[in-house]
Image (tube, rainbow, N blue to C red; front, side, top):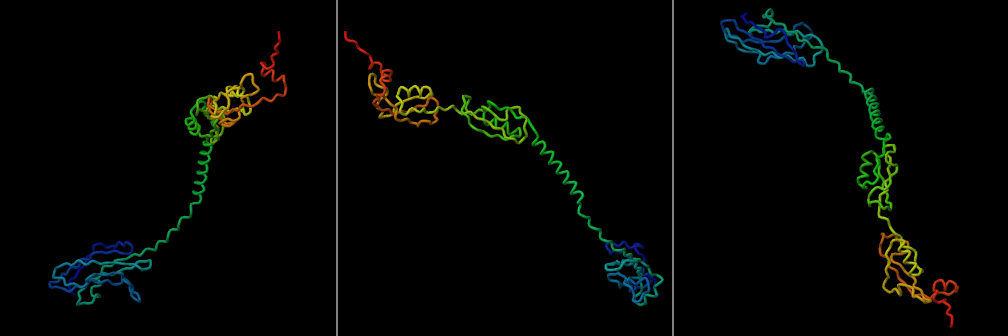
Length: 309
């Protein structure tokens, strides 16, 4: 028997996911070259023989006298059941039987741990969902409280419309506007409801009355004498002028004829600006004599009593 010896890089094998390796240094101590085999055998005698889960690349090598060869030994226990698997590594001459070198065997134990049980999947976190929902509702409640709790209405009277609307909306209220004829500057707030300083819920509507120029109404003068129409237009703060085709501009004195308004432009009842010009159309019409007293009151010259000397 030749002098073949072997040492291992580590007496233990660390398996990572069932795989690992170590280095076996085999030395030929004989004076001549030897064909050396590095073999792996079950560490226990079983029937049938158990697997070694070991591979040795290029296990048969010719080693010169006194030389050392490095063998890489690979282990793979994939598919093995839980337990320990001893493996004998024997370096022997290819011309002899492995059993002749049994006393030089190195035993390596491969340990296959129990398969890890899958961790139970965590249940749905209903408790946290409920807590989150309660917190969310509380936050919403606080926000709504501050949004709609009572607040003082700002006083915007006399302010321009755009500025007043901005102040009201910035304070958390809605603004609604209507127009009202007023002597106040056009476009300013004349009245508001609720009044400034009143406390009402946020989001409430504040009604604003916006000043527009005061309008005059064309008076009802159709059929009236032109003198009466002039007085009515003066009272209404309107200017009077005559249309083309008007027959007269005043009632003739000492006459049974009168100057009567038969048309106006714009029409009676129309809203126009103060001091606007209103056109009238007139006609000369006969006076209807019904009561001599009324005639004498309207034309006293006709009723004068002339005494003969």
